[in-house]
Image (cartoon, rainbow, N blue to C red; front, side, top):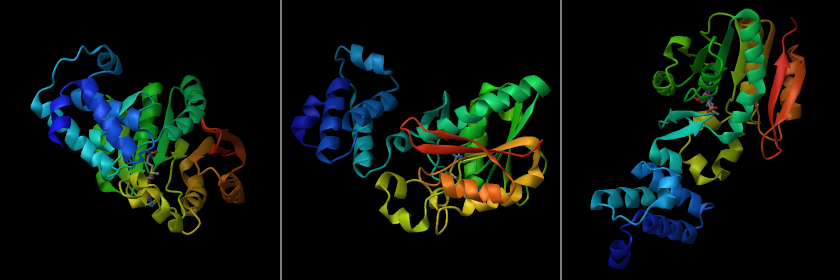
Length: 294
Ligand SMILES: C[S@@+](CC[C@H](N)C(=O)[O-])C[C@H]1O[C@@H](n2cnc3c(N)ncnc32)[C@H](O)[C@@H]1O
């Protein structure tokens, strides 16, 4: 860091300006947002605190912490990986190298199935959720946080990811209603559920090298790679779901924006009629819901 910048970057706002400038020069897509999120997250202040800051000088350790984080961002590490956590459907979720960073698009999946979970909880006093490929636990924990009588099992092929999911359940006070199962798709899963939900890996293997560095270099490849055509997980879930789904139950999956027709075909070939398709906030196809006849 040149001396001049070091001398002027001693306040929160000056650091935001410094980072924003560096990020813009490096061609990062959201330089201002990233700079503000990093400074606020690392200094544990809100955006309002930042706006109202009257220019108190930061100590050298704080300044150094922000500048080291900026260096990581310039190497394309995502902001929330640097901070170690991110917000998802109102929950603050810890991330680890083995977990996908939950995306805002996946909140569409939670919103899409919430009415079903709520209705079942009212009607029967419970709703049993199986979240396949739970990662940080995002989808299942968001549902349990919203519906107090719902219970959930998160599965994953990654033991380390399941550890993070359990930590997140503890942090959210949901441990008593959440358990985990290390499993490749349904292998080793026991029991019957009312809802099977999944945001599985769905990127075609050949597309992974061309992803943005934030995704390609920092999300675990097993969380991304959906096989040659990106659809391997849907085939496995469609074939295995029947045994673990109660009559009248639902299977809800997140998909890539161009996969709705193919995924619908896979589930309908396994006798799961499609009952809904939901777009994300950007207007892209994102979620499909299938029903098991009751
Ligand atoms: C796209 S990530 C989704 C993570 C989390 N549900 C979310 O929405 O943020 C897919 C997850 O599936 C897991 N996974 C990959 N292959 C699997 C398999 N064969 N069986 C179970 N889980 C698998 C990955 O480890 C990863 O956690």
